[in-house]
Image (cartoon, rainbow over all chains, first blue to last red; front, top):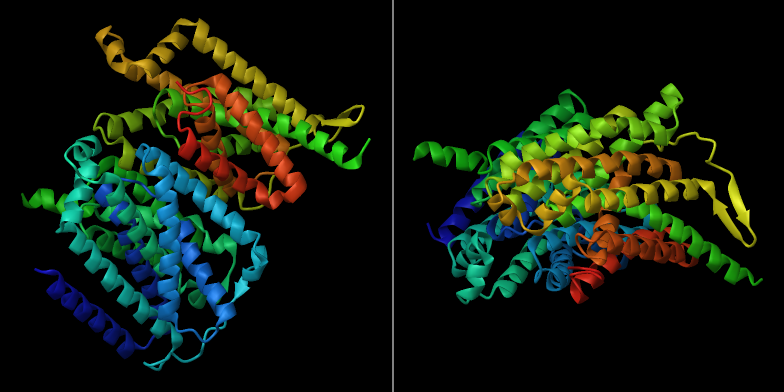
Length: 312
Length: 291
C-alpha cells in the first residue's frame, strides 16, 4: 500500500472513531480517548528516533512541555489564535530545540545524546519555573471555550479531533519513512553506524532529521495540553509519566514498525485508564514502568515482534 | 571585611563541601559508566533508596543515618549484583546495550521513584542527628557540620575505593576489565564475575551517598532526577574512569552551583550542570583528565 491510500485508510478509521464518539456523546470517553491518541503520537514520535535509528531520547517531557508552554505564551499574547496554528508553532519550537541539542551531542556515542536529553528535561523545567510570564512555579490558567469551533458540541471533541488529525499525520510520516531511502539510512545507523558512515550514509544529517521530526511531533502533541488540563504548572507539564509512557509504549508494542507504538499505546493506555478507575491512580503510573522493564528483558521485539515470530 | 566578599567566601566554602558530597553521589556512576561501560542512569534513584533506608532506620529505630547506611551496605551490594546479573543476561550477552539497556535502567529509575512515593508519600523527609544544626566558626567562615560531616564521609569513601582499586588483587582485576575485556578473556579470567563485583560495589556506594544526601537536605522521591544531570556532568567533565578527575569536577560543579545559588537564586542551580555537560560534550568530550 502506498502512502496516500494508507493515509486515506487512517482518515477513515479516525472518522469512524470520531463518529462513534459523537453518537455516544459521553464527555468522559473523549477525555480518555484523547490521552490514548496523544500517547500514540508521543510513542510514534519517540520511535522515529529511538526505534528507527537506535538513539534513545529521554527528554520527551522537555519537547512535550515546550509545545504546551509555547501555547501558553501564544494564549497570553493572542488569545484568539486558532489551536492548529499553536500546534504548528509548538512543533517548530520543539523541533528547533531538538536540532540544537542534537547538533551538540549527536556526533558522540549514543549514550551521550541520551544523557544530554535527560539533563535537557531538567533544564527546560528550570527555565519555565523561573519564567514569570508563563506563571513560573505557580502555573498558568487557560480558559477553555465552552463550545467547539467549526464542529459544535463540547470543546473536548474539538481537542480530540485535532489530536486524531495529528495522529494520522504522525503515523503516515512514520510509515512513509520506513519505506523510503531515509528509513533505510536510519536502519543502517541503528545496525552499524560505523559501517553506514563508511558506505557514504550521511549519518549526522539523518540523525538530525530524525531528532527534529521526533521532537517536532512531541511539541505538537503537547501544544493542546493547556486547553485539555486548563491549569498547567511545571510539575504536571514535566511529569515523568509522559516520558515513561512514550518510551514504554513503543517498546511494549514493538519498535520495528509504525504499528508497535499504536498497539502499545492502546493496550497500555487502556490498561492504565482501567486501573485508574478501578484500583488507584498511584498504581496506574507504576504499570508502564513495570511493563517496560519486563518487555525489554523478556520480549525485546515487543508484541508485534512476538506475533511476527509465530507467523514464520 | 566587605559583606559581599564575605558572602563570596562562604559561597565558595559551602560549594567545596557540596562538591565533596557530589563526589560520593557520582562515584557509583564513575564505576558503572566510567569503568564498566554500563550506563546506569537509575543510580540517582538507588541513592534515594539509600536515603529512605537511612530515614527509616533513623525515625523508627533511632539509629544514626551513616551507621544505618554502613549496615545496609551488604544488602545494597547484593541488590546491585542481582541487577547486573539481569542486565548481563538480557542485554550484554545479546549485544543490545544501547536501546534495551538504557530503557531498562530508565524503567528501574521510574519504578524506584514510584515505589518510594507509594510507600513514603511525596512529603519531604529528614533525619535527626547530633551534627545536624551546629556549625564550626573559623573566623569569617562558617563551617556547617551538616555539610562538613558528609564531606568527610564522602572523602573517606572515595579514597578507600581508590586504594581498593589500585592496591588489591580484585581491584586491579576491575581496572583490567575497564581497560580491555577481550585481553582478560584471553587470560582465562571471567570478566562477567568481576563486573558483577564492581557493579555491586557501585550500587553499594548509593547506600552511603543516600544517607549523606538526607543529612544535607530533606528528601522527596523525585529529587533523584535533579541528580542525573549533575552526576553525568561530573563524570563526563572529570573524564570517564578517572577518580581524581571526577573529584575535581565534582568540587568545581559544587562551587559553580553554590555561587549561582548565592548570586542568582537557588532555583537556577539545576541549570548549571546541564550547561557544564553540554559545553563539555561539545568542546572536550574526553573530560579534563580523560584517557
